[in-house]
Length: 84
Image 1 (cartoon, rainbow, N blue to C red):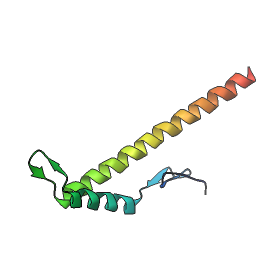
Image 2: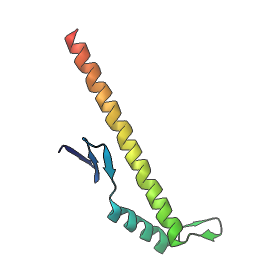
Image 3: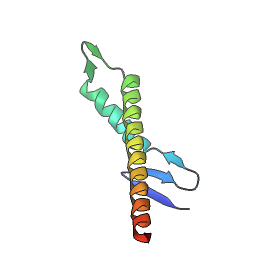
Image 4: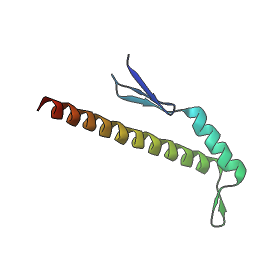
């Protein structure tokens, strides 16, 4: 199996399955909760902090996907320029 590991996000190339670093998600949620993250006067519950941590992790994965696609497109254009 071929794996690419970028910032603890593992992507299985064959199945195109993304696995998230759940330890980092939980640590992030607990950090938000313990510091008393709030919005205006509302202090977030642990569930809301966990939701936010998952959203942050998904954004990181999407960013890495866009970066990988950009790299693939750049390498394809370089290869096509070499053959001309």
